[in-house]
Amino acid sequence: MEAVIGLEIHVQMTSLKTKLFCRCPADYRGAPPNTHVCPVCLGLPGALPVVNREAVKKAVMLALALNCRHIAEKVVFSRKHYFYPDLPKNYQITQFKGGGGAPIAEDGYLELLQGGGVRRVRIRRINVEEDPGRLVYTEGDITSSPEVLIDYNRSGIALLEIVTEPDLRSPKEARLFLEKLRAIVEYLDIADLSLEGSMRVDANISLPGGARVEVKNIGSVKEVEKALSYEVVRQRALLSRGAAIGRETRHWDPLRGVTRPLRVKEEEEDYRYFPDPDLPPIPLPRELIDSAVAMLPELPDARMRRFVEEHGLSRELAYALAMDKRLADFYEETLKRFWAPRLVAVMLAVDYLGFLEKNRLRMGEDRLNPDLLAKLARLVEEKVITPEQGKHLLFRVAREGVDPVEIVEREGLKALRSEEELRRIVERVVEANPKAVADAARNPKAVNFLVGRVMRETRGRAEPRLVRRLVVEELRRRGVEVGE
Ligand SMILES: [Zn+2]
Image 1 (cartoon, rainbow, N blue to C red):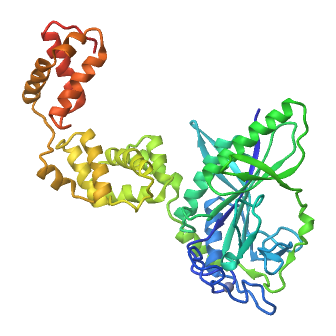
Image 2: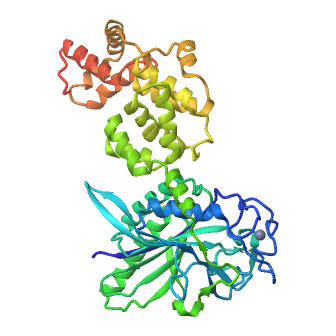
Image 3: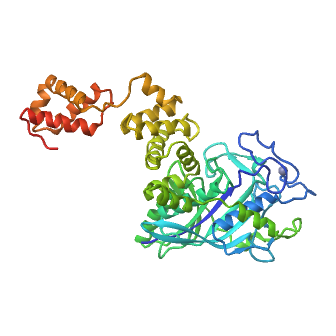
């Protein structure tokens, strides 16, 4: 049973210095509550908004990157009215199609690479709008907290709202879409989406025979996949019992991993949209579009293709790197110092990411840098150390920031290349472990045990595959037949 999924994504433009309509600093994280405020973003009478030109330019860049066929000729802002404590003016300045208003861009698409094919997900529109204030629930969440605090530092922060057509067919596809959108936003230097609350997603989902259910305010890409998967199971169970699914809005509780009913959905006319008289329509200057075009960087898909075609990476490796701008930059910086694309790609996308995840670190919180990684890659590529040693050394370099060349020199870690020398160690180990030798014909674990002993004798400086071959040869020489 295929799901029909559409997404509405809010991205804070965290790279801007100021809010959307005033000069308050945009970086509100960590600031004491209600200190980054002024008459404009507090909605005091008589205060007049002035639009942030840089925000409009970033929106145009995103529209170009998302292949929007229609970019507005005039920037028009509308008021969306609702009464809620996070909104000091009782309306939000946003964009709206109709009644004289228009989104900044419409009719785009984003392509997903899916099992060899390409899936096109249509973008309905992109809006520029202001973030409401932040509600702080002192205990639990919106459904359980006994009191609510309000912080207007977030009020008026520039947001991009990206709305897709209901073109996604599974929770996984929704995740892939968001991963790519996130990458594009970071490539365009619109936002650092690792910041908490910088990307928030509303998802709507329906199954055949059921109405559309909206899940509000999901905080991360992974959570979107989880929330949608939960909804698929919940809705399928209801439908299979013959129960009806009505149109409703639900809230995702990431701690319990469930969605819960929130409120009855408003219809659009409830918001009484009309163009904001404080912000007369501004023609979008030609030179602003030109400079947005000129500033468009290489985007994730193009970079991935380049990694495959020019660096000889597999599609999986190229994807893992290209979808993470900082990782891809790190990779290319390393290659400038030492050219070994496949080796460096594996070291970063597999070993290094594994290290970060295991230690719950984010990039930059460890001590690896392109200089050190290039030295390490050279040691492996020139066979001074084995790939296995390289991996262990990478963990150490990332933890301690030490120079791998110096460590190898100082601690005598050069790989044991001489088969002669290795053979002598193998003979010694086999001689010293008669029980394992006796077991080896029946029990493959006994062979592993001997290989492990030899690896320990060499302090990990030998190639495990070579050691295994020599151990098997030595056993055969002694009349013990073992499988390879
Ligand atoms: Zn302000």
